[in-house]
Figure 1 (cartoon, rainbow over the protein chains, first blue to last red):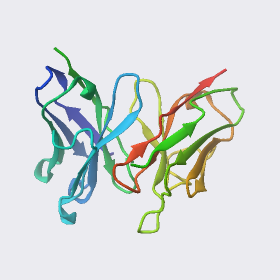
Figure 2: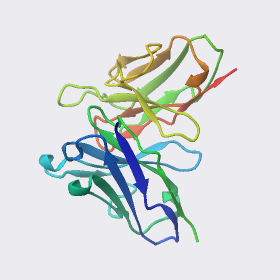
Figure 3: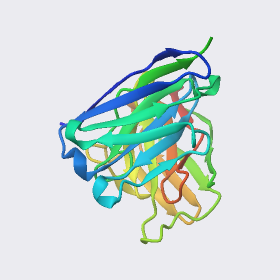
Figure 4: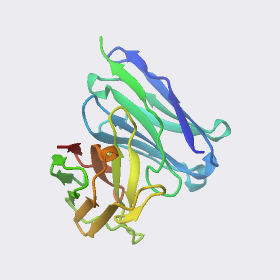
Length: 119
Length: 112
């Protein structure tokens, strides 16, 4: 069974940093693209970042709203994808989901982790 | 950036009756590989989204056949033939043809 466990969320002050983790199980992690999607309280879904499998050259992509402040990475030895977030702003407050592309875009999702940026 | 526009934003429906959601993209969604990466997701309150439809009209594993997707070019639709109580929530279309990938605003389906 495909499963994701996100961690690392919490309360952080504006300008602060946080690193989210998403530990995957139930599939051959190294072969697949992984993504982060976020949802601000009461709002819709926003794609944040994508990282291809390392066999594809470790390509990464970012939404304009986070480019230069967030970095996506993966550790295939730990079946984990990360989202390092710097210079956090109030508008980054959201539930952050990791989601896979095993066969189709965003086919499996984690339960999400809440990030709150506030002083 | 491709803008995805859903209508309606709210849809009160009667149990057992059909429902339909429209999704329009600001540009065509045919990828250079020939596929059209238009998906539909359903999100219940307090839950993560789940994939319903991929590549316009293909139901994902375990999705009931009362759900169907259609469309081409810049016009797409999700249809529910007979709404069930478990279908309440918010539905999103999404394009993954061109970065940045973008979602529609969401359509809230509720029972009358």
